[in-house]
Length: 276
Image (tube, rainbow, N blue to C red):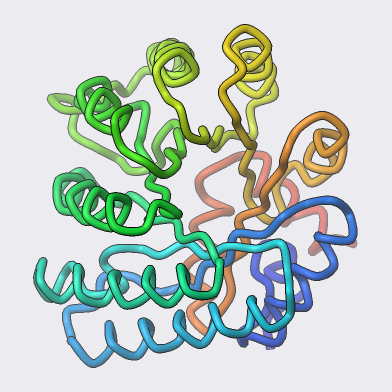
């Protein structure tokens, strides 16, 4: 059983649990992005098993008629096994999801995976359209990547970046990352035709995106994590599409501890829950 504190950040260990959570947030006007927890598999059978679980998940989302999509980590579906395995497994998921009308997001991991992830995204976006990819504002290469992505179908999620990247390839100062985030939002709202996803719990960035929307009219949505700023998520549903990133699965412990470590607010939230 997942402890009560972790339950705030992880929607159970099985498909039934996560779909029940998505149904609940749909009732609040929030849409779901479901992620099966798992990453960095170097055994092809592990990558194949999680791929099969995603195929089942897509079927279940379609059958339940939920307002929900899925998000897949490249190293979970074969990138650490090899590029061919990754592209084959991801292609199976996207093809099934396209048949069922379920959108697929491709998460971004460490900088070593960026090229392979963008290549696989482009392949699937050109073939199916209903695919999204994440880019990170702290990477110095992101301006060039956005220029490439501007001409492709699909959506792009902009996040600040949670990985501890080397200084030679990444901005490490918070003020600089914030400045780049706003600069990239300017470019995306001006140059993109398809949807933009603002992956941030920073209300200033959300407001900045809303201002750019009023200026350019480019469709956008806000994406936030389960268990983080849920009061803000509810508030924002009155004025813009809001998606909640909903992790689930038996590998919940490492995800929960990472969430608590990475933000002071999350650690305080967990402590208050422990103390009742």
